[in-house]
Image (tube, rainbow, N blue to C red):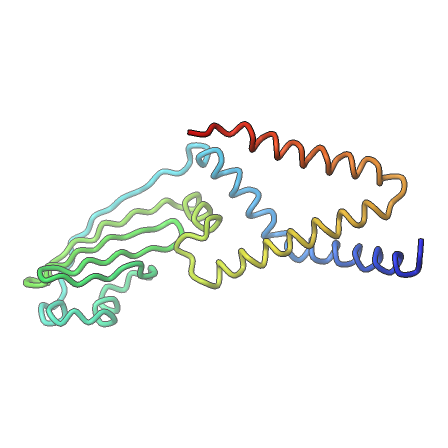
Length: 190
């Protein structure tokens, strides 16, 4: 093996080890939450809904100032939609595992909040999909994907550098690739 090849293998091994360890928690999270999603949360994802009546000052609701209305509601959830209509204000709020729909009558200031919580199971599902998470979490998801790619490539390069394991490594890689292609081919179309 040439000096360049040895250097590449050493660099690949070190990169593989530390990239894999750096992403360990996220790899594990996405693997477990992916299994949970595939198996419909094993029946643990139960929505708990509550309804609540609210009353806001009429002047505030008639002005329909987004920030002032949201500050008054103090829900702690991210705003998905804030729509002002002639007769009402409709607000959709969400965060991982939680949703809220708010309707406020602009003439009276009275309204209703319908909340739905799905607990930690719903939060894991939403985090896995990047739903209601914001740009920081979605960026972390992208970084995790890059970590998985780097970990996979460097692991493959490591196997190629090990003469006793090279043949079985290539066989395993080919088998995994064929398994993925076969599973995709068996997906019903229609």
